[in-house]
Image (cartoon, rainbow, N blue to C red; front, side, top):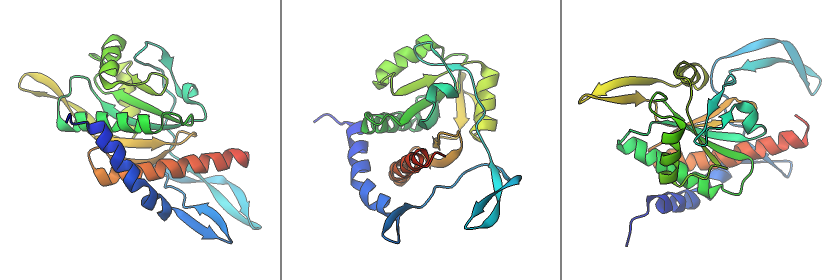
Length: 235
């Protein structure tokens, strides 16, 4: 029987999803409440306030990922407006990477993209950390190998300086170019990053850790529920 790693990941995520997800459900006066996900990055107290049960609470300014202008595997220009009102799951990669970590992360991202294929609130982004090599034509061929649905999963590249800034200052990750056996390689933070519709980071998950992937599936559901609730309440 042919080994299918994507199928294995999908089965694992499905089996582990329900009990983990229930952890986040809290009962309060007979209503389902969701334990909110953390917001990552620097934060500071604002000069404005909001009221909670008549008490003035200082607002908090959270880290937000700045806008960008990159291109995908179809050579279409994309920015945050492209993903308006969508939760984004993002990871770093490069097409010449042949390590276990790169391969496993690609398969996991593929598994999630198929699992949530019909969910219009969730989009997937793989950002190349080797933009000098990974042009749109290269990404197009790579996307076909990954069976990446271009309507659901973007492989992005662009100006090297802008990519580096997005990785370091926006995503708060590290990516270092090295040379191994005369060939370029990268040492980087191999994580999945969950980003809300306001471009705030809501979770980091080790791309090669099965427990982390199960937690990610739980927290995707939690974040989508939060976003739907905010839309309903006009926030």
